[in-house]
Length: 220
Image (cartoon, rainbow, N blue to C red; front, side, top):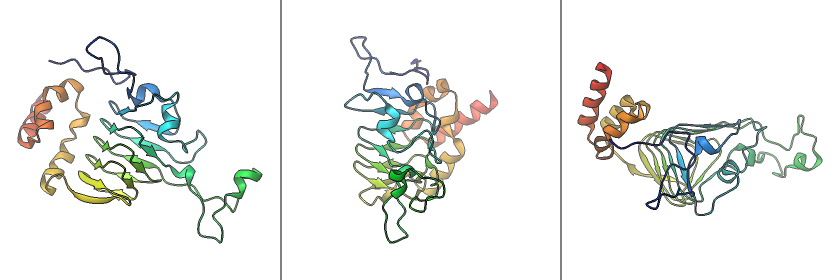
């Protein structure tokens, strides 16, 4: 059976010559930030290695931010993706959106700043395509695919394909019945050895085989 790298491996891909592929990382292993919550085996790839992965991916999520960025397990994040979290927001319900308090530094009760924004939450097994931007407070369901360059906010139901700017659902990946069964299975919570053992069913969309595997796991 293939041996899967542990989730705390910074560079989980080994090239044929034995060297590490430095442009792909398991994010849990390279980000230590109090406002990030990262699931196991979620990875990001880039064409230019950053000194700070957290800053590159979510430049407005500060250690003092009120909101969090929550990423599920097994997410796949392509090059140039950005999470535009609530720290980038301006207040826009008044006559001006100018953030005066950023410059005069009197933050307590500052009328020019917006209130705290909600967390940005990305479900499990979400694929975010190259150059996509995720807007503040987005709630992205499990199994969603976000197309190249899409700008996505709001709530996206599980197992949808989202494209464009503004991001719109192109289509569902599976029927509602299959989506409900996948949500119940939660294969991403299985031990990694069992996930790899049933890779063909997971990646081949064999829901019957996957449910049989789940029953076997329950019996121990």
